[in-house]
Length: 385
Ligand code: PMP
Image 1 (cartoon, rainbow, N blue to C red):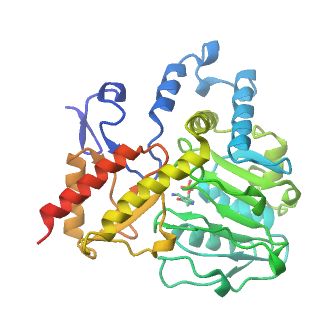
Image 2 (cartoon, protein in one colour):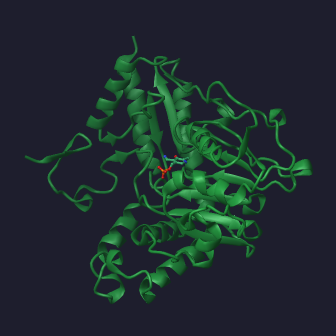
Image 3 (tube, protein in one colour):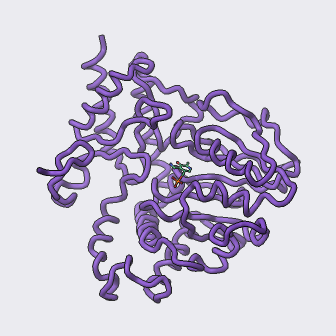
């Protein structure tokens, strides 16, 4: 019997045979990777650069792996325009590891950290930070459908840092701005979790103390977390900060202080090179605007058949979250099943919010989003009463 994968009989047919665009895969993470990258990795899989072994088998001290590591860092520096006073390094432990790493590295004794909580992930980060010191939620919200106006935030003047999540993957809320670091807050470094929108738009890294992204959404397979941190903030970690979470030690060790997630770093390098060769962040930003606008237009013009609860100015370009007929769960299940039959997979919303979520990261082409858009129109036409 063929095995079932995502509700489809899987009999070992390779994606090459079925074609990269034969199905849409809208998973929130781990997510679809660019087809060209997968083919390159497949080609190099058993014999990387004539080393006769796989990247998975290479020693992290081998010249081959060190070249991959250095190229990956160099590529990130080019892509994100990183100046010399910032370090770029790779960690493991995912986004959740950073919920601890950020306070352990940046909070300092007896100080306060400000958190902007706009969804599941910033909420988790704030709760983790509370273990290590004083934390101030600048504007507590009763629901996660928006970003509160910055003028309403109660910020701490001498906070160690201001933390926020640039794109809330579960609630589909994205920041259209970088929080202020002027006036009273000129010395408060801004720290951002960019896990689910890193690589989808340009941003000025000089406005940040540190940003991080777990790569399993836009940049690679699970495992690696990219961190970009301002040099002067390093070297002040809490005395109990585990070595493995210490930014300074990881940076000084050139991301090979201990055995890194080598294959994930290699894949991340390939995806970043793919972004560079496909128009860079400018093009990714244009594409993500086109793709997300297409879906939100259908939602907004559906006479309430589809609804998005997120305020229009803060709707995510990467995770389009919506309900059907105001939250008709039977109809939503029917939508997910019908979508599967049309080869549009992994559209079920996060279990905590329900509904539908279409994650349309960089590797999801505009024609594939067009297919989803057509499907949404047809589904509405067949289910409106
Ligand atoms: N931050 C964001 C924005 C996320 O979407 C996620 C995971 N979906 C995390 C943090 C946690 O990452 P991880 O599962 O790698 O710990």
